[in-house]
Length: 351
Image: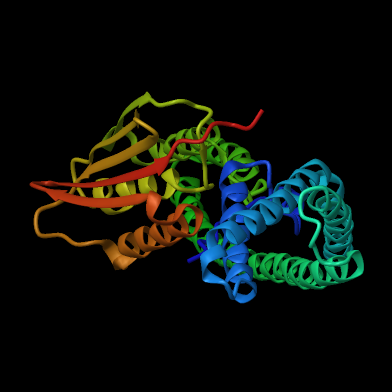
């Protein structure tokens, strides 16, 4: 089943109707389809079973010859074709396949006429080949067009879903920050002013282009600014133990780590009279980036207002949309602490 993953609009624009037939996977799929077509044509045309394998070999050679040449031409012209509209690219691909078919049909007839004097007359051979090839080319062009439209629709739905989930994270974050400012305004106005300044910088980072992934370095900037605000409010009750042993160029969906840290402060540290330490560990594990956030919890206490679980479900769903089954979210409650671990595929900042 096709896994819809949110993509940058600019990247989506480069994914046109014509797939990348330069890639081995696409080329192999095309050749398998061509071989199935050759098998069907042989079964229909070869009523003399004693010549079945010979006919299959000749038809397969002819079909694969067409497949490879068409794939090469589409590979070479893909960038240009994908700058056209979807309809124009589909018609251009069909026209290209038809021209290639006509040229190779003429070549095949000439070569075979030198070997087999009993070959069908030229007009019959050419008409039959072009009729079958034209139908296959038309169906192929139509298939590429329809599958591309379907993928764009699924992709748009996935992007819309991510934006909706992203929008649900921001109000919770802003609400907590405004509470921090309100609590400091009467007692420590100087600190409240610093919080407002930090918050303006925080907004610049968090409200930037959240339709695409961002480097781990930017996510850490967001986390650090948030912790600075909370430490002004909670003072010595909040301490942070952060270890970063992961590539800072790792690309992540926005607002993945910061909500976990916010939960750790709001649901773990704040209810404790003596406060506690939020532990943050970022490491690279093979082809993945592991992010662990741990906080102490009061014995017998649950999430305040259920917000902890809501935020975790939000993160789970967003990671599912971005990475499918490749991303993991593990909740590991322990004696006196609450631990959340995220595992996402490592992809570096594109050059």
